Image (cartoon, rainbow, N blue to C red; front, side, top):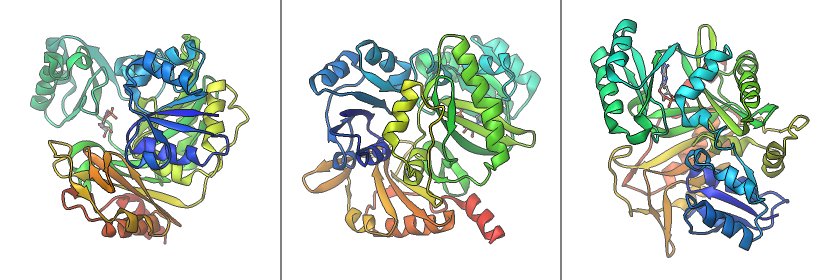
Length: 427
Ligand code: AMP
């Protein structure tokens, strides 16, 4: 079969790498892709926000199946439009993608179905929002309702910060995404990402993962799209995974089906593991980036039939197998990220880095220029490695980074530290 993957980040490189290994695939296309993805797939440059152009491409190139990486396309209804044109597509419909597209929608769904989450209220005007925040006190969390490219959440340590966030969001600082906001209770605990493959009714949990959202070592500095990840996440014990499925994912699937918007695709639950058990922080309707990179390294089974089974609604008896090894990804970003950064610097040493044992280098923001690879984004590379435990995967990943010559880039030096501390305690 011919497959088209939409997206251009590290997540899509990992998906392309895994799908390219499938015996089911004939041609693999990616739009728009990047310099790394070009080693796995035929990159094509069309604007995937133009759904008619995507459909035309699929028809002309006999594409049987489209896999959608980024949330923006899902929330915009790319899956509905492809399916209406008779092309199979992996990912949620527009109405199911509201689980990510509207935080208020998800909070209301949790409330109506007793799904554990932070206490909250929704607001469209600043005055009642501020009086609610004052009544609850700091720390408190202010969230824009819509998609805001990771900038829509402010964890306010003080009421002044909370009020400034309310004014910024409702004042149009995030555009239409901030026409409404959610104010919620601050949850204390350790965060973990929980992924499940869903077919509208059934869910298969994927391996667990944890990421590092802050830019600098020690989880300090500004929030980013993610500076590294590892799998498995020791905080996700079997018991906590079971509760995440039974108390969070399954009731969500049931509720979505009941409202005529069955959820198909990857459901990514951002969880806070509190003293009272896992609570939902947010849903994403696609693989996480860089969590996808570690999951793809650990996945033993063929990805393509799993994605097809989710789309076809036949996951019930499906089984996915995983390598016991741990995986870890260190993101290399352009200096300045997540603020302003420059593009176009040359990245050297990638070939040697890729030869380090058990290492795969996923590209995020790169472009090829003759034989050279240039930085072309904020997050640029995901240096990924397998190892017996997280500690070994980290050793391999940082050994590969030593080979990379890119003075204009930086990375954190402590990815995986929580898991590694646990491993050294248990020996
Ligand atoms: P979100 O985009 O909703 O995942 O939020 C981004 C980050 O803000 C999360 O990964 C958490 O670190 C933090 N966060 C969001 N909601 C809460 C909450 N209710 N309590 C504590 N931290 C939160």
